[in-house]
Image 1 (cartoon, helix red, strand yellow):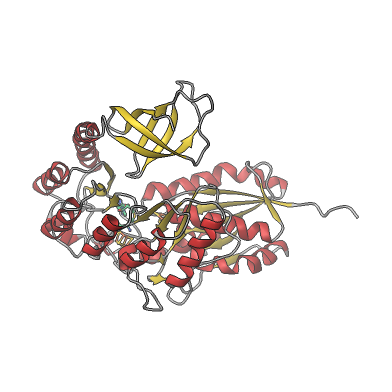
Image 2: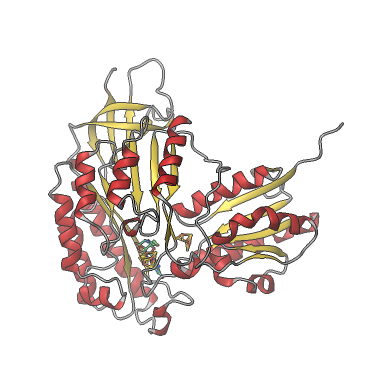
Length: 443
Ligand code: SAH
Ligand code: SF4
Ligand code: F3S
């Protein structure tokens, strides 16, 4: 008997790590349903975009992309919009892009198999726009992780913080945590499958509440770090309001926990933080930074910043600039404020001109680049362990990642290039604002 022709899909992901990980779950689920993944839209029966809505540009990207791909429809292809734009815009997407026949937010992915059946039956408007408050975290045994050595585990879905500028509580719904038993089960499964690095994910991992009331976030972190075979544990994102000293103590006590904390500040001005409804002040934030700096280990700190929030004065912006040198961040992800639908800040006039936002962003990035050049210099002469991420490049270098999440490009005198995912000891010989250079020590 001839094998049934395989149904194919193409999936492109926009947005944060949570979307990247959701896509791994979607891919696994589709494969389970008899679909196979292809690498181009041309080759696919079903074209899916897993979308992001965090800034207007991210949302526009998706609609531009749909427009560009539309011409492929002639050949009978189906389009689906998944993720945060899908949840936010809902059925309006069918009006704006009538060739789309599937719209689903992340809280409905459990129902993907049923939705696929509807699609295949010719239904032109299949939706998964569940009530986000009642839906469970999407956990599936089919997750198709794209990397064999390091992988994500979602521990908290949604967000209850409702920062004035942010769409996440509306696109991913109310906050809900997974049981520590199920998180640890997945961590052990991954270790058994050969993974050595785990990244715990949530929009606010610090507000993790174990539904079984067994472990706090810091305890869960330590427990994942103690799973046999796991050598590195990362976690993102932390929120200053819910960050505890126990997290720093756990990093000091458990060597597998990476020495890196991503703690978004958003602004260095208590006035702006108030307008943003971040629920902390500059002083509150700096107190958490002082806990991290008091650790025995050198814990690297990174952050997110928004410039040009409504009402941000020149002095407020200056307060953000002074944070950079005061904290000594190793990386800063900075964005121009973008007004978003449904958010409380939509009612505040977007008062800072676009050109002024661009100037502030530039000033901030240049200042940070100069500071980073200094900060990265502290590693010259140190021996750091890296996980190998990239094979020998044209310059004769191999790319590795340090526990602090820094890129360390190194040379080796060994005859055979080290395997991807292996760990190497490297002596740092030089530094740049965004990377380090070194030589591997002979084993
Ligand atoms: N949950 C995390 C991050 C959420 S989104 C936290 O609380 O920090 C990632 C980053 O995008 C945010 O930290 C913020 O800096 C930025 N961001 C979110 N909404 C934005 C908006 N409307 N305009 C510009 N940047 C935004
Ligand atoms: Fe958005 Fe604030 Fe929640 Fe982060 S904590 S996801 S910025 S609402
Ligand atoms: Fe974007 Fe949704 Fe993540 S809006 S940043 S993909 S939670």
